Each structure stands twice: as C-alpha cells, then as structure tokens.
Image (tube, rainbow, N blue to C red; front, top):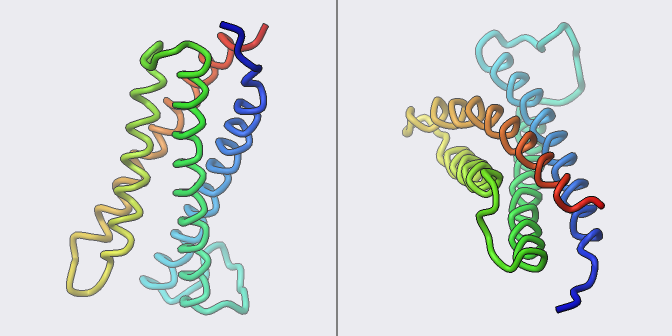
Amino acid sequence: MHLPSFLWLWKIAAWSMGLSLLAYLFLAITGIWMFRMRTTRESPFGVVLPWNRGEVLSLHYIIGITMVSLVLLLLAVGIVGTLGHFGSLGHSSHLIAGLIVVALVLGSAFSATQISPGKPWARPLHIGLNIVLFTGFIWVSLTGWTVVQKYLP
C-alpha cells in the first residue's frame, strides 16, 4: 500500500519535543523562584523582578498547561505516525519511554493542582515527579533519536 510521507508529522514532533524541553526548563526556573521566595523571601540569583509570587505562580501554571498539551500532542503524533508508517506499535523502547513521560507529566500536573496547606504530600510529590521527569525526558530523547533514524532515508 502506498502511504503519504509522514515527514510533516515528524516535524511537528520535533518542534513539540523541543518546546516541551524548553517549557520544562522554564518550569524549573519558575519553580525554584517560587521555592526561594517561599522559604527565604528573597529573589533567587539576586534578580529582582517586579512580579509578585502570585504572578510567577500564574506563569508557572500557564507554562505547565502548555507542556502538558505539547506532551499529549507528542503522544498523538507518535501513535498516528507509527501506526501509519509501520502498521503497529512497539517497535522500540521509545513507546515505553514516551508512555512513562506522559504518565509523569500528568502525575505532576495533577499533584500541582493539589498543592495546598491541607495536603502536605502534594508539593513533595510534585517536585519528586519533576525530578524523575528529567530522567524520563533524557530517555525519551535518546530513544526518539534512534526512532528518527528509522524514518530518515
């Protein structure tokens, strides 16, 4: 069967992955910023911005929602592209890595919505999931690179 080129899908995936990693970096920066402001009442790195903690929190949430959307887009593109190109899933460990990253991102997003004084477990869970997510992003990036090599002529 003659199928159309899926190169446009891989371009979407490449941009989504790059933007997801950038969002992760910005989330780490704003998260450290909020932690520092909460614990020491000082701006990190000696940088003073005219933003209060609530504005940084809002920015953190917006970036987080963007990252969740990008990761879900990556999941959809990966499934559609792989099924379209190979006709089935599970051709490499990239599927497992991707599903784990999706689960970590969704778990992190859920735990973020639970952070409050009445739920002391939520903040450490959120931070812990994000630390593990760093490893997940490395794994999915490395396995993704090997997958990309299969599609390129």
